[in-house]
Image 1 (cartoon, rainbow, N blue to C red):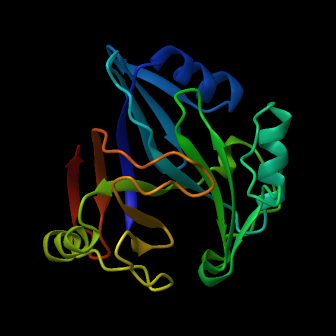
Image 2: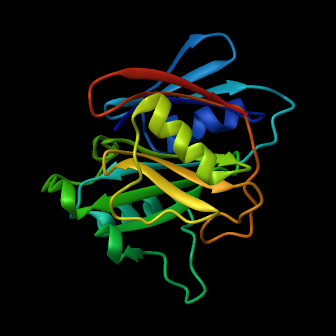
Length: 219
């Protein structure tokens, strides 16, 4: 699966746009009023301003599989605090996914992840920078019935469970290393945080493994 774009709402459009433009140095385009498009490699992260927006989203960016420490250092040089686990570790090793990741918050409180997936074999020897954010690789989907959402993804979109993660009653990962829906039950706390997953409006444009493109709207 490939995630082509995700569109989220925020009450902090100005600070969010400035963060991704000035702090992370990403290409930010304002092509419509009250909306910004942020280029993440081959995909787009889109924020729409809504003063009433209160939702917290989770999304992830793939990076070269050999550069998680370089990615962490890049964030820290920009004075971005990384999220630590209960042991104080800021680098998470997902053995079953054959991946390493680190997490941080953007100005809207969204939980952002850089993840280095070894099975993609996309090593890089270039210095880590904005070009190292290769694509949007995950978007969190909050629902009241994870199993039912999984069945919908299979029947409507041809998206199957991730072969490295067995689905559970309150969590599943659907797709592939290049694109995943992280499906969680409403109220379940996001990884490394005390933030309960809550529904918020989002739109996702994605491509399944057969090349069919779909538009998904949630919330």
